[in-house]
Image (tube, rainbow, N blue to C red):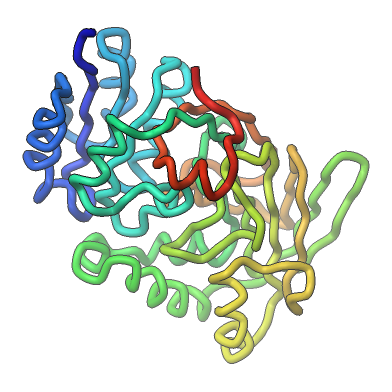
Length: 304
């Protein structure tokens, strides 16, 4: 049996990428993996690397955070190859959802020994997202994001950005269409989630999953900072319909228009704006996940 051959793409601009790039390669080769190391100057070059080399390998392994996975998701989907994840970013919410280990050697073992599992992919206009697309507060927080703060403070940097952004985020009106229903919302934040977690551990919904074939939308009503702080526990575990100040919807497609054009944050990247159509692409990605994920959440969609 020929050895597993992977294309290894390490985003050296991610929080732990530069420090762990060589260790990742060494750990994979110690597991008898044949590594084709991608060579790119900036994260935006990741799609081109995948398109150039996907046909030469059995799997595409991404080392970085959720932004790296966002850039890679479309090309990986089109390649038809499974994806391995080495969580080397700040929040690593995609890996958190799938129980992929954060310790590097364990994550490398998951690449080799994990189960190939199909997960959904979100699409907003012509942009893909793995975790969540947000309008409002998260966009302003993203604008305030400091690369230095991400590197030194990790996920705690997200929380400080949110509180800074709260002061400068104006409420907005939105119309959300889902099937035959129309919802008029007054909001400070709309989040449309494919996965469960975003922003370093906040949850879109108490029962959101990456393999349930649906999107979960929540709208956070305008409120005082004191009330927002009081809501944090429910936002961490994922709001449900009992949470005051949050409106929840679920479906496979949402059409969102706002009272003014607004940028949309997709996995930390500002790449599109409203009006927007959000849809789920069921089982679009094959990802290596630990057996623990399958045991805990069921077999779901298995890869080939």
